[in-house]
Amino acid sequence: MVKFSELFAPKDMTEGSPWKRIVVFAIPMLIGNVAQQFYNTADSIIIGRYVNDNALAAVGSAGPVLNLLLVLFMGIATGTGIMVSQYYGAKDREKLSRSIGICITLTAIASLLIMIIGPLITRPLLNFLNTPASIIDWCEDYLVILFIGSLGPAYYNILSGILRGLGDSVSALVFLLISTVLNVVLDIWFVVGFNMGIAGVALATVIAQVLSAVLCFIKLMKLKDTFDLNLKMLVPIKEYTSKLIKLGLPAGITQAIFSFAIIAVQSLTNSFGEMVIACNVIVMRVDGFAMMPNFTFGNAMTTFAGQNIGAKKIDRVEKGTRAGLRIAVGVSTVITIIILLLGRYLMSVFTDTTELVDLSMYMMRILAAGYIAVAVTQTLSGVMRGAGDTMTPMWISLISTVGLRVPIAYVIAYFTRSEAYPTGRPESVFVSLLISWVCGAILTTIFYKRGGWRKKSLAAKDSPNQQVSSQFKRNKRYRALDQ
Image (tube, rainbow, N blue to C red):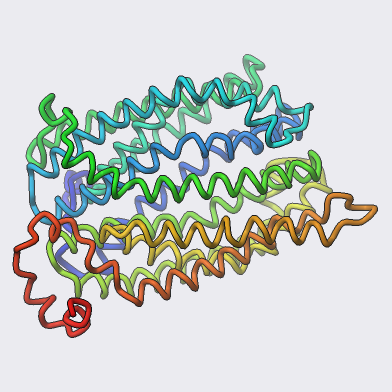
């Protein structure tokens, strides 16, 4: 029987049945991701119910701008997660400690930049996106509060990522659940009780995530038997900073590319009017839940691959990948079916407007088949990132989003213009997304099978003269790669 205290301890994923390790690690992450999505969903439900549909549209229009300015945190989190999982798998305390310390320092610097730059460029970006005048002030209020309070959300996401890299997904889950409950309580208090509107929702989110960040930091301070966290480790060292940037930059660029693509498509969405904007918000909220298994297993595979590659167990990585892929596709298929059957009930939670519910369900059906494709993309990309290959997923994202989604959306909109739809049919936004998902899955599968990710291990780069393990030598494919 597993002791209760062991649930909150770092976990070694280099031993035991791969599929069991992945599932046990992923379940708390899945619950946590659902809770994270509930943050945004609760905001939308309360805004839609207690303010109006235009306020709901305002929250959605603010999303792409927020995501664009948070790419710094995405890069830091990805780079740190890879370094932590590989050095923990390699049992290298010094490198593990340095990686965590530098991550904490860089997060503080990035947060300061966002707190200064974010409020200054919010209004110009919203104008650039052709945000309707009826919602632009609400959008600005929402974003400015989130940017000024970005320190809390940033540290929660970074520190919980470190805990997951160490194999502890349970602590991150508990802290997130606590902050989620607080967020909902504060949402209702500020919006319904104090009539603060969108500003109240933003303030509630910041306060709740500050609490979760503090709890994560306290937990890390207690892991003295795993790594050292002191002032010496917080001082940036070129060797580790450059590694983190090299690993995290492609992920940050990927997120930036994704954000720019969303912004480009959001501009098209805004041209369809407030009804379609609100529809997009509702679909993306439900979509967020459908995506949760995909993101969860992608992150789980990053940690699993990182620890096992750090321990030079490449055969175990491949065995775990096959198991993770089967689980991710299976779970995603079941959730997609559930959403198709119950989607209308889910969407009616956000609004009483029948026309808006019907439109949202119609768009959801267009996206449905794409979730299984995303399961493949996220799982295999997670393995590549865990191995240290963050460039390949970046290029795939560039091709599937900028190269495909954005042009296809505008082309479809252009050729479907009519008297009833002067800027084109709104389906263009969702059809283009489906196409990009499917193409992304195909490209990811091809590059995973080519195997370039196998040579990206940090441990191998740190010890270039070290003999590869017998597992590498026994595998003919790796001898072929070496030649």
